[in-house]
Amino acid sequence: MYTRRACVVRLLMLPLLMVGCSDDFDNSQMYSSNGMKTDIDSLKRLIHLPANVERCEWQTGTRSPHGDDWWLAAVLEVNSDQLPAFLPGTGTREFFETPPGLELVSSFAALRLLPDAHPSESGGIALIVDTYGVSPYTSSPLLDGRAIKLSANQVFVTLWTN
Image (cartoon, rainbow, N blue to C red):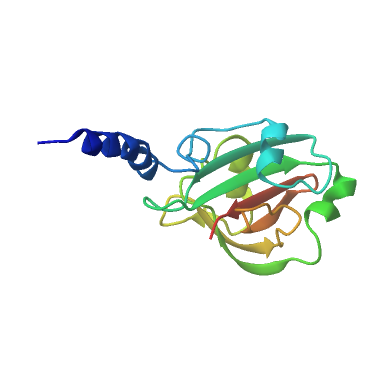
């Protein structure tokens, strides 16, 4: 038989149990792959942009079926004079593979046209290409990634957590 005190304790515990069952940082809507985005201001809330961007397309998705790791990929159209701000230093020739679930549509389709691009086992694109660091773009929790020159005025950047 429940006492009044036991009922009060259970009622007080209910909010704690509800908090324990939910994420403080709900990334299910914001960071799941849900199509192409073009809003520069929304992109600026997630990453830094080192100079003016004329136009952008970006996507987000998860890095694995479980866990909270996620990625952001963007194609940035910039003034060709400002390209060095977006691709600092010299590139490093290395193997690169697009993140899982990246939709290779619209401006992202240009990745298929890069020399040596071929389909990867995960359904994306794999290639050997000059990559650049992403320090101009990083913003917690997106602290790792790569940038690639797509054309004289387009940069592909991908950032991920962990």
